[in-house]
Every structure is written in structure tokens, then in C-alpha cells.
Length: 603
Figure 1 (cartoon, rainbow, N blue to C red):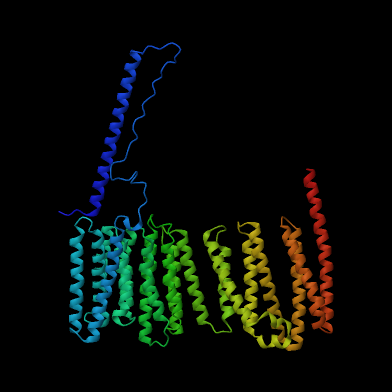
Figure 2: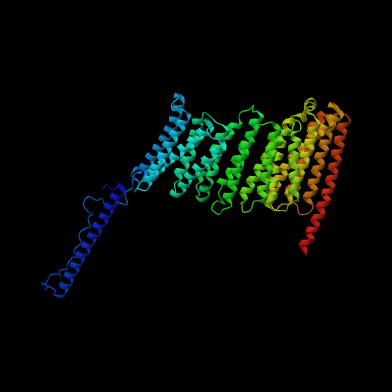
């Protein structure tokens, strides 16, 4: 009988340990003999010669303990090379052999097709018999000592080969209906992944999923709707294994192939209506499986705080966002809005899901709504549409409870919409248009005025809502400062554009800038009065002073050169009167505030 190398190593180690124990027993016997001789010498001491020091008997040192012959000093302390570790070389050879064999199965089918051998049915039968034989050998090898490594490789090859065989019979030759082929493929994948669960083998699960996904397009000659549906079916079949075992790599292997295949499929434009409906069905299938299994996983304790299921939710939404070229605009908008509603409903109604999953669902829903709005609206109305969505969300945040996660999430999404809408507005009417009448006339339009007014309302509402939150004062002031700058741009752009549309290029441009300068100064005065009254932070005063200085500089540098006649006079008079009013009111507020502070200190 031939024993495996692992048993030989175990026997050698036991022999070495027994030799060490024998040496230690010999050492103890030597010490015992020395102790007995010392006791006998003390009982009968030798006579001491005169003028001679007593002789002190030196203790006899025991012989050093020598390691057994043919054994190193310490076997356990010597580091093992990577190829000497148990099972490493065997696993490498087995996995490599499984990959090569699976490629051989695929090449067999391909060569048989190219050479016209056996016929379609014969190719499927031969491929199935070969894969089934590998699976049977794997089951037999697994029961032998040390045979688990080879069994995993053989089983992975056989199961992936069976999946490829079913794909060829369904997607390539159409021997069976697609629904039947998907059901058979699901059963094979479930059996294989169940075997991986029983054997505690991540390698088996990864090999079945990844090997099938890589070689299936080669066997079928490219992507098809049936092949993508089969990949999604494999993704659904792997849910049970992922639920039982926390294998992060399995998330990637089960989600990446169908997501990537779907993204590639929707990148090709020029689809017919029938093909568009098939794409919508595949998108819904992928989205339902990805989001549904992820939420089910995160409801369990083992996966509650894992980021991988949340990443799956985001990943399966990418093909939906990328399908704008493959679907008609009306169908794309309907799909995006439908999936967005599903995300919001899931975030609000599904219980036991962690907060990061709800944030992911809300973010995906917001991205889908944004994509639908961009496609549904024309280029001129796009800024107003996006900013209107931001205004609705800010209004919803204003009525939601303070400090709640829902309020914070709504504000975050509205902030994203505001940024996107502002960028689109600046592209439709750039800030440089404020410096030249003819350039301002080029970009002037009613949608620009409407979008600027909505943007101003959004940033003002955000500033009010942010001030009432429980966030730190520093963060609040930063957000309010950014909102103030964006609001000044929106006010200036809207005023100048409205002036041009109402009064023409020359007069409207001058009138718009006059109103803009006066509006800047009014805003500065409001900030100064707010900063000195009540329990306000000093930064409000600083911002008010900076804005007042900016208004004066605009008046002296730009308005003095650009404006003429009555507009220049009106601008200077109004700004001067506003400055006088601001100085008087600020002094009164400051004096009253200081007097109240001194009285409170005396008390």
C-alpha cells in the first residue's frame, strides 16, 4: 500500500519527537546518578591534609542533549518554502489542468463546428458526456485520502462544461426553448454551487461562474439575449452560496459578467422596437436579481455591514444608465423613472436594511431620475428642468424632521442636482456674457432667465434649511458661502438677461447691470444687519463687508466705464444711499447690542 506524502511527513515528525523524549529521560537519569554520588560523599568525607585546602568536588555537567541522528536541530523553526506547503503544488496543477481542460472542451465544440463534424446534436451530446464523465470522476476521487484538490478541479471543469453545453444547445443551436435552457442551466449551476458549499470550496464556485462567463461568448460566437439571460441566471443561482458563506470575491464573480455583458450589449445603437423590448426585459431581469439578492443578503446579520452588496446595487444600475443609445427616448425615460420609483420604494419599505444600502438606493434613484430628465428635456429647457427637481427636493428637505437621515440624504441629492443644473446653465449662458452686450444678446433667452430664477430660489432655500440643521457652524457657513456665490451669479445672469430681453441690447444691458449692483449692495446690507443682531456668527459680518466692497468695486471699475448717462447716476446714487443707510443702521444695532451685553455682564 502506498501512503501519501502527508502521512510520511507525520510519521517522521512523531519519530523525531519520541527520540527527543528518550534523550530527555537519559538526561534525567544522569542527573539522578550525580545527585546520589554527592550524597554518599557527604556522608563519608575524606581526611583533610594539613596546610591543604579542602577539596571541593565540582559538579559533573550532564552531556549536552544531542538531536537524533539524521534530524535537524529544530524542524518546526525552519521556514517552509511555498512549494513545500501542504497541497500548494497540487492545487496549482489541478486548477491549471481544469482551466486547460475546459478550454479544450470549448475548442472541441468550436473545431467540431468549423470542421462540420458530428453534427449539432452530436457535438452537444459529446460535450455533455465528456463533462458528465469528469463530474463522475470528481465524485469518485473526492472520497479518497487527499483527493479533494483534484476533485474540486475535475468537478469545476465538468460543471462549467455542462453549462457551456446547455448554452450551445439553447443559444446556438436552439434545440430547446430559451426558458427550458435557462431552467436547466439554473439547475446545473445550483448543483455545482451546492457542491462548492458542501466542500467549502470558493475555487469551485468561482471556476464554474467565471469559466462559463469567459468561454460562453466564444462558443456561441458573440453576445446574444439568451446568453445574457443565462449569465443573469447564474448570478441568481449563486445567491444561496453567497448567503451561506461570506465570500467577497464571489460578489465580483457573480455580478461582473452579466453587468459587463449587458453594458456592452446596450452600447450598440440602431435597435429595432422588438430588440428594444428585449433589452428592457434583460435590464429589468438584471436589476431585479441584483437589487433583490443584495437586499436579501443585507437583511442577514452576517452581511449587514458589508459594502459588497451595496456595490452590487450600484453596479446593476450602470447598464440602465448606459442604454440611452439602445432605446428610444420615450422608452429610456420610462425605464429610468420606473427603476427609480422601485429604488425609492425599496429604500422606504424594506425593513432590516442598513443605512448605507438605503443611501445607495436613493443615490441610484436620483441618478436614474437625472438621466431621464436630461433625455426628456430639450437643450434650452434642460437647466430649468434639473434645477426644478433640485427645488422640489430642497422643499421636501425643509419639511422633513431636523437631524434625520432622510433630510440629509435629500439635501445631498438636491445638492448634486443643483451642481449639475448650474454647470448646464453656465454652459447655456457663460459668465463672460455679463461683460459684453453683444455676447449677452447671443445667449439671452427666456429659459435662461427662468433657470436663473429657479437657481436663486434653490440656493436661498438651501441656505435657510442648512442654517436650521444640527451641523457644525463651520460647515454651515461654508455651505452658505458657496450658496451665496452661486446665488449672486444667478441673480446677475437673470437680471442682465431679463433686461436685454425686455429693453434690447444696449438699454437692457445697462439697466440690468444697474439693478445687479444695487441688488449686491442690498444683499450686503442684509448680511451686515443679520451679523450684528441676535446670536449670529461674526463670519456673516465679514461676508457682508466683502460683498459690499465687491459692489463698490463693481460700481467704480465696471459700471463707471460700461454705464452712461442716467444709469450711471442712478447706480451711484442708489449705492451711496444704501451705504449711508447701512452705516446708520449698523451703528444703531451695534450700540444697542453692546449696551445689552454690558447690562447682562453687570447682572
